[in-house]
Length: 428
Ligand SMILES: Cc1cc2nc3c(=O)[nH]c(=O)nc-3n(C[C@H](O)[C@H](O)[C@H](O)COP(=O)(O)OP(=O)(O)OC[C@H]3O[C@@H](n4cnc5c(N)ncnc54)[C@H](O)[C@@H]3O)c2cc1C
Image 1 (tube, rainbow, N blue to C red):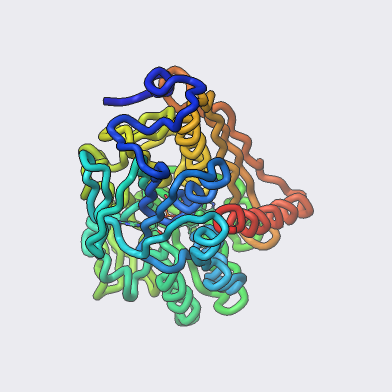
Image 2 (image 1 turned 120 degrees about the vertical axis):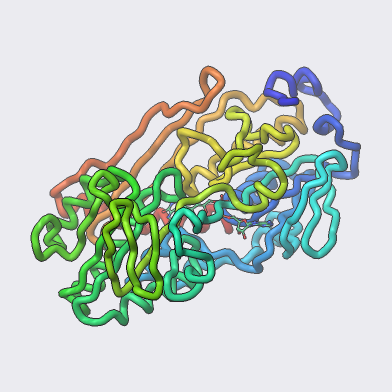
């Protein structure tokens, strides 16, 4: 059964003095919110839930003791920031926001009994469960590619950490005049402009240290966000469109889709059967919802988790919210900013349910940035509303290409500051 806002209010009564619990839940000393995944979506939910409500017991289940932010991780590739700069612990969530953090993997949901089972054998009871496990990579979409290769000499680095450092080492130690291939995935995937940001940062480093090297972006899409901005910048800095270009981009309509990897020959094979040998191969695989969502049946046979577009309750069970990259929330893009907006909204829904107050109509934004270099940044603001039973884009404001160097540098500085303040917004 799916509950919408009105059902919930009818069930518990607007303005009810007593603490309302979701249907089927037993009364407890404090209502319990359990969050699977302490990444951007999960951590934002824990923090903002506490800001809204002092009484709720919050538990985050996350196997890693630290979280490494993906936003900003392309800058690790040209030495502008370090992985340490992007790494946070769960201390603030524990101590300032009073969340219990269980450092284990969630393995199962007992939907009827309202428990999450962990890798350490715990049964963690919940009144509401929120799941934000991020995506997993579909390695098999590129024949010959695998998780083992990604952890070795063919890192995708689409999860910041050791693979980011490996990719940096590989391309920075490439022979003079070497070739980097970046294979960009089809939509939807996390952070649509990031493959092009990555190419730009690598090119800036190569221009200084290996000026005859080349970066070939093979794309599974016919176009990409901020394309005009990036192409302008590449033309200006890297001879884009000429015979001596350092960056070349091949869209899917020109045979850019990579279908196969021959690791022994260091070669990718495109949909058209073209074999391209490269010194460094960075395949960013297509994505689907994280494994936990599949193992627990939340995906209902789809690639992403279907949710009620008003409140992000899963279609499988209304006491289980799903947010972040794993949720099927078209037309929202898969970004950390969107995940954090969904988190704030879910916190309002739960607070509303506890207090009997109608949370009203949601307004979500994606206030996001990308960079091409330290002198060129881009911004985009999407505004989403709930209308006619679905999520709709109300407005998209995108920074148009500009030839004003001051404006471009200003946007770069906005982008860099955005990353810093965003990290603080989620984890401080
Ligand atoms: C290179 C790059 C650059 C990016 N730049 C930006 C940017 O500039 N701006 C922006 O807004 N977004 C950016 N993003 C996207 C952003 O990182 C994601 O959209 C965001 O992290 C999604 O949040 P999430 O909570 O869904 O997943 P994540 O942040 O990935 O968190 C998922 C968490 O769940 C945990 N988990 C998984 N399975 C389990 C389990 N079974 N039990 C317990 N825990 C589990 C994981 O360990 C992880 O900590 C970028 C991404 C990349 C790759």
